[in-house]
Amino acid sequence: QRQKGGQLVINDKQEGIWGSAVNVPLNTCPLMFGQQSVTLVIQITGDGFDVFIQDKHCARLEHRTQLPPNKCSLTLQFPSTDDSGKLEKWTVYRVWWGHKDLMATVDVPGVAGGGGVAGVNSFSSLHPRKLFISGLRKIRSDQEVDLRRAELERAFRKYGGQLGVSVLAPKNSSFAFVEVDSERQAELALQEMASKYRLNRARRTKHEALQEERAAAEAAEKAQEGSEWD
Image 1 (cartoon, helix red, strand yellow):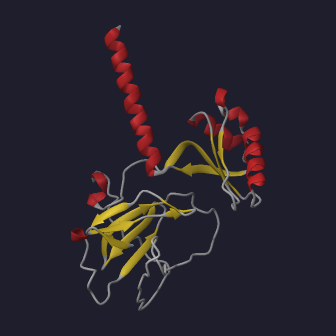
Image 2: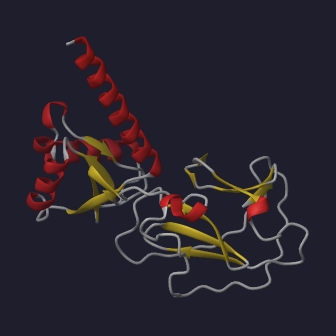
Image 3: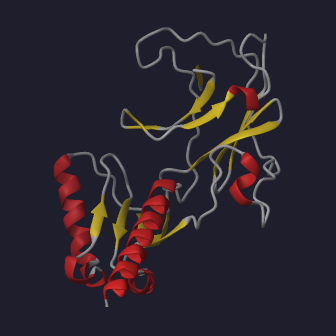
């Protein structure tokens, strides 16, 4: 977190690349900068990282990668420098983590936009065509990535239609993503491939949801234009 132009900027960084930031105007947050100390709570839920400052729910950073299927280590890190190499000064008085009841109250049916909390969006979190394959042998080289991709393309080929399936197999990982032709094919793959692979529906990112909404709107517009010419 950092101050930038009167905003609190919350983001993720994967393989050295920043994602799409959630920008929170400072005038919507409790007073922080210039104070001797503030209390920051980050609650991890199935939807993402809920950020509370002085007990006020200020933002949510939705999950941008698939959640690990099993227990894993959790690391809290305070960077010593920013991206420009400038020193970051932190004074940490106390750190605590553990289980706590859900603190966010924005996910109330009928309340659009999450009650104005930055980063909270209303869309299905499950991807209709993408599958998450876990429990694979960890791969560490580009050659192993190519072999993993080829293996999954062959295994799931029948579910990909004429163009085949799309496979994402990150390096230094024991999981992969497979995108099939349709929601129906995804259901079939879940049923038929469960004996060979550990697989579940992948979570859909905010960016993917917006892309699908935009594509649907463009398709509807083209269909409307076609009907006008008939």
